[in-house]
Amino acid sequence: MDPTAHDDAILITPLSERPALITRIYEIDNTWPPFVPHDLVGNALVGRVPGEFPAYCVVATDGDRVVARGLAVPFDGTAEGRETTPDQGWDRVLSWAFLDHWDGRAVSAASALEIVVDRAYLGRGLSYRMLEALRNAAAQQGHDALFAPVRPTAKHLHPHVPMAAYIGRRRDDGLPEDPWLRAHVRSGGTIEKVAPASMTVTGSLAQWREWTGLPFDRDGDTEVPGALVPVRCDLAHDLAVYAEPNVWVRHRTARRLP
Image 1: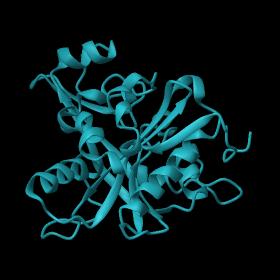
Image 2: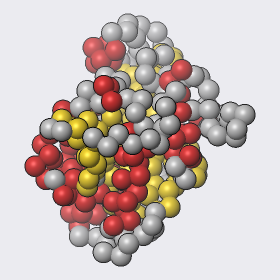
Image 3: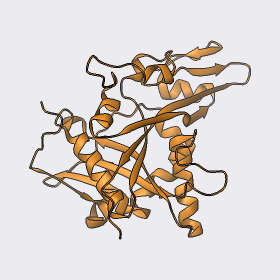
Image 4: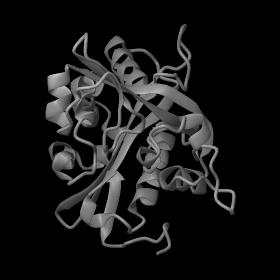
């Protein structure tokens, strides 16, 4: 199927235009690994993004069914000690967005956080449309670019390959081997850099056993299904740490001054 083909039955709009759906966007049957919701920054803040930043978020419906969501936030990447593409990627821009919001600080950049498509609607090119809608939403708010700490969807199949090497893998046509990175590049995105600690999940060994069903009974690296890199296990300290790398991608927008 043409990945950019449209299913005209699906309606995609900024969440600010359909506020009644704010409480429904998590009804989607998603494919996130079970340990991801235990990222402390995300656990504390991401659920508040739709209500606080609805103009930056988009929702897709098929009739009365919510079938996809796209979340993004604005932040100030020009303040001292900050940059637009921080090494702590997803966690960092999410925390900056709320700090800036609470402090009333002017924003300079917009970052996507996630695009989630319901399992039943995968393979219909909907992720391309959601990405386009997020770019348009950022443009409507006056941004000339949308940044994204991208989680490559096939990287979990190669957990021991460094992310810098992984993003260098190309097909014969020159596009990235990874399907989600390829979608971003096809959509006009430019790969900027690796965010080596974009999302961090820490927990006791008992917690990791509960989250994954794995024994966590050896020191060192443990491969976990869905993890982009191994989880580091320390028996003596009863601790396991997962630091997920992402890939910063920059998308230009057709900027519209608010």
